[in-house]
Image 1 (cartoon, rainbow over the protein chains, first blue to last red):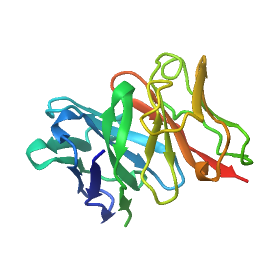
Image 2 (image 1 turned 180 degrees about the vertical axis):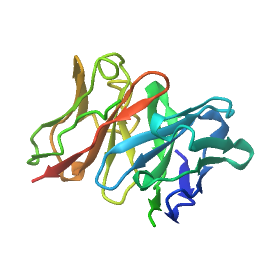
Image 3 (image 1 turned 180 degrees about the horizontal axis):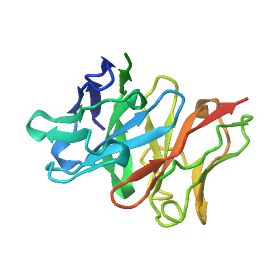
Image 4 (image 1 turned 90 degrees about the horizontal axis):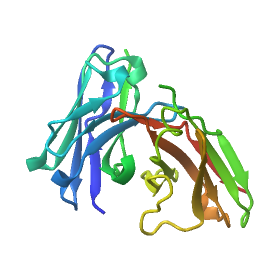
Length: 118
Length: 110
């Protein structure tokens, strides 16, 4: 099935930046579209962004457009999320996941916590 | 786009059946047959249990079944077992490469 391991979360001040990473192993990373999903404290899941196999197509939820950018490095089997102009409402656990059949998310990582606070 | 609506909690006794509803709109659940369901046990990784409306990944019990009527999709778990106690999330394709999730439902096995 493979494994996804997120890293890069932490405490950041409002307006700050952070780059999340997701290391993939045990499967052919370059064969999969990938996504980031987040869960704010006490709330449900929220899709954040999706990227196609070669990184040429990127899609972001409206609330992060212009601030967050999804990217990938297939040579390093890694997915990234660059987050700029962070706001308190971006506080959440961020998960990476493989995009699977029928617009579903097949494999998930354990998540990394991002806290935006002064 | 608002999140899909799920009940915050449901409960049932071992052996019983429970149903978790997932209500969207004609722009998401009602317009596409791309509803997926996820299970998460405390401290564990999210797991895909239903995709493309009604398909189960290999290894997922056939006690999990789904139905859809209009803008509402429903997950039914039959023959409830203690191991089914978890959080459940629905998700629908919403067009333009967007996904929409539900708020999650906590299932308690009494």
